Amino acid sequence: MLPQHSRSWRRASRWLLAAGSAITLSAFAADEPAADSSTNGIDAEKFFSAIVKVRAHALPDARTTAILGSEREGTGTVIDQDGLILTIGYLIIEADEVNIVDDRGRSLPAKVVGYDHVSGLALVRSIVPLEASPLPLGDSAKLAESDPVLIVNHGGRDDATLAQVVSRRSFTGNWEYLLDNAIFTSPPTLNWSGAALVGKDGSLLGVGSLILRDVTEVEPHLPGNMFVPVDVLKPILRDLVKTGQRAGPAQPWLGVSADEMQGHLLVTRVSPEGPADRAGVQTGDIIVGVGGDAVHSQAEFYRRVWGRGAAGSEIPLRILRGDAVREVKVRSIDRVKYFRQKTSY
Image 1 (spheres, rainbow, N blue to C red):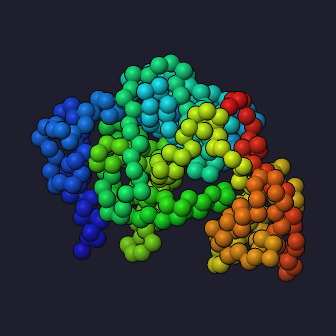
Image 2 (cartoon, one colour):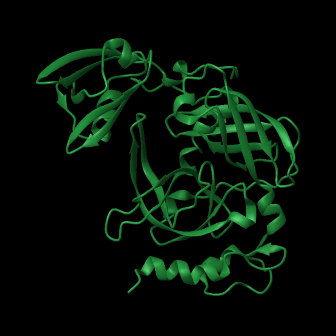
C-alpha cells in the first residue's frame, strides 16, 4: 500500500500547471486543473517573469572554490519593482562577476546587494532594468505539514514541481549554521539552489537551500529539499538593501565543521587560515565542550558559542584528541571577513 504522501503526489501530478495563459495555484487543493483562469488564478506570464537564473563566477583566490566551485548557477526570485532578486547566499559568496538570465533568455549583468550568513540568504540586483512582475513575500509561518507547494526554478514552467511540506523543524549544518523553523518538502527537485517555494496564493514562501536524503523525522523517511523561510528575511531586508548586512553585532565564527556522530561532534574540516586553524584545532578532533558546558550536538555547540558574545569573542573549547582532553582558545571572527571580497557593500 502506498504511503498517503505518495498517493497525493501521484494524484496531484495530473494537474501541475493549468492550461493556457494562467497558472491556477488554487488548483493545489483540487484533483483536476481549472479549465480557465479565475479571480483565484495567476497570470502565468507575469508569474514566471519573476523567476530568473543567477550565475556567478568566483574570485580567482576565493576560499570557497574548493567546496562550491568557481562557476555557480541557481535560481533567483524578483521581489520588488526595482529588480531586487532574492536567492540563496552560497551562489554569490566571493563572487567576481554576477549575471542573471531572465525568462526571455537575456543575460544581464547584476551586482550583489547583500548577504546574510545567519539566514543563508542573499540579494542581487540587475544593473539593466528588468521587465518582471515581482512575487510578493508570503507568510511562511502559516505553512504547515501536508500543505501543497509549488517549487519553481530557473527552468520555468517546464521544470516546476508540485510538492508537499513534510516537516517544519530546526535544521543545523556543519558550516556553523542553524535555522530554527526550516521548511522540508518532498518529493525532491534537482535544481534546488535558490528555487522559489510558492504557496497557493502565488506568494513566495521559501528559498531553496539543499537536497536531502531524509526530510522526515518519522517513517516513511523520504528524500526532499530544505527551504529557508522568507519570514527570516523580513526583519533584515531593509538593512541588507541599505548596508549589505543585518544590523547589530555579527555572530562569532570559528571556521570548524563538526558532524554529529553517535552523540559526539567530530571535526571533519577546519577552514584554512581560519580562527580554529590558527588555534590548532585539527581534523579528527572531537569537540566535547565550550568552556565548562558539554556539547553533544551541532545545535548545542552553536548556541554555546554564540552565547559567549559577538564576533571577536574568545571561545574556549574542550577537545578530545587521542586519549587526552585539551583546552583550546579560539578568537572568533565575523565569517564575512574571512571571504575574499570584490564587492563593497
